[in-house]
Image (cartoon, rainbow, N blue to C red):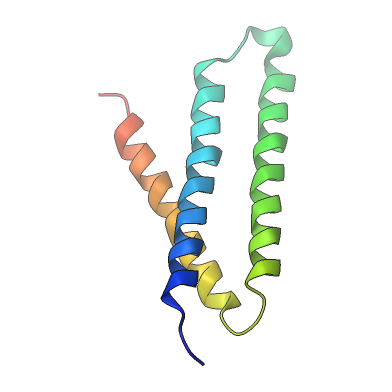
Length: 95
């Protein structure tokens, strides 16, 4: 099994980008919450949209990297996703 570093870098960057979209979208949703009558559709719509984008990207990643390096590319994808999550938590936390 040869390890292709470019595949791992791409998987990490895709995970980081998706983490930025997912958790940035969550932050924007919470910052712009409407009044209570529209609150539930707004939150659920954001949740389903973020889930659809995340699951679509994961599906494409699995199909693109199918083979020997799928597990390792999913691991680096998850690492990028979670590192962005931790970065945004530290950066956007109220002082």
